[in-house]
Image 1 (cartoon, one colour):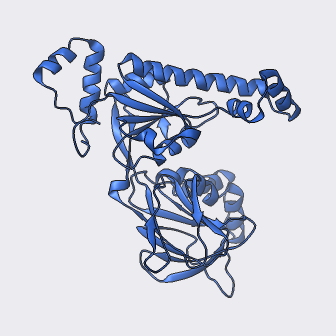
Image 2: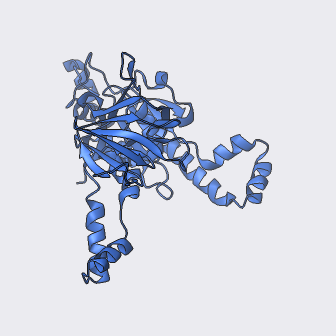
Image 3: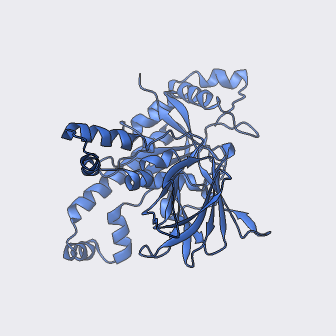
Length: 370
């Protein structure tokens, strides 16, 4: 955001007020990574909002509030809890919008479920108001250097790993306007689909978390050939393949690949190695921490889910790292999914090339603690 070329007169006028001075410092901080093309001021932003569960149910069920509540009660849903979380979320969205407007920023709002390409165009920054899922949605349509900044609107129900941490929405805005942040770049996966011939296209969305390839029915075996960094192809049978970025290494791939203390204890027992419960836990924690890598890391990590090794297939490395991957489908009803939001058919003969490109990196921010 923002390579600024103010005239001396404009700069002098901005410095006359405290809020304008903060805005100028914010703009200058953002100018450390100038955008291509003409310079832009911090004038307009988009807030992509999660729809709280109670509001989703209200739209889906229809009727009066009492009728909706009665239907939810009959399902055994804790209606009061849903209403409370909805109120917290919507209040924090309003606080975020008002905090931005108070600084003279033009704010546009859109619900994540209605978010389209046109909404993201021309924005100086995009805020996600929700949790990590909302952040992924907000980032998905960003294909240039526009920053995406996450605001966790309900930390009780959402961890907000991708969001600014520890402050209220108004405090987050104040910290940003005071320049108390650093740029953070997150790699994203580019997916190119081809059929081995002339037909080739790049998926419009980049994966911030992961790409998943598997049969559309989870109880069916997935068949594919895997090539790591241009090496030899390896025939795979499994329950699917997860390919993740450093950002996604704390999410699905982590929970799929992590081990438990009971597994460590069993392996050590079979090896006739004695270890205390604390030692087993330390081994478990060390291994699981090794699955997490930085969000800017220029590597992919792949995790083969439930690999099948028999007389026809032998998967040497069910978990590994790579600069690039090529997957050739041998399945009949497979799908390739990007961050769980976009999916395409990926059947026998289709090829997917996965890589990380510097121009695909997502720009976001993290607050600096004094």
